[in-house]
Amino acid sequence: MTEYLNVGKIVNTQGLKGEVRIISQTDFPELRYKKGSVLTLFQEKKAPIELTIKTHRKHKNFDIVTFEDHFSINDVEKYRDGILKVSKDGLKDLPGDEFYYHEIIGLTVIDENDEELGKIKEILSPGANDVWVVQRPKKKDALIPYIESVVKSVDIEEGVVRVEIPEGLIDDEN
Image (cartoon, rainbow, N blue to C red):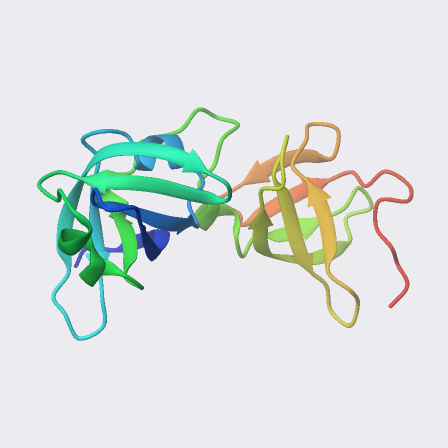
């Protein structure tokens, strides 16, 4: 059975020419929404359908896309609240220092003293670099920037991320 990964949720239509507003949950929007990319739309109580990207642009916090053969608001209105996904089989291998979100979430974070900090539960993309949210037992979540000076190694096979935490980066009070 094919596995799928979330790309984004269609939250609304945009204008009258068949554009939809998407809140993205993908690590590579420029790749997912590239002209010709095929995404699968999942909606409650409906069979999944494949849609081919025709155009893509950014607008505020949204990705705005059109699909081939969908020319007006009437063609896309029915997709509102649908989830766009990409088949796991369609993923390309990435260079050594790049990872898909689904590979990182759930990994155990080990600090420079070989102590376990917690598990990565979420990835934020606030700007220049991603920030990994680490859920710690009985403590506040830690925010780890994905930068070379902090993240020393990522071992997907072992399920471990090794980090070096600069002083003051993590607030150790409850």
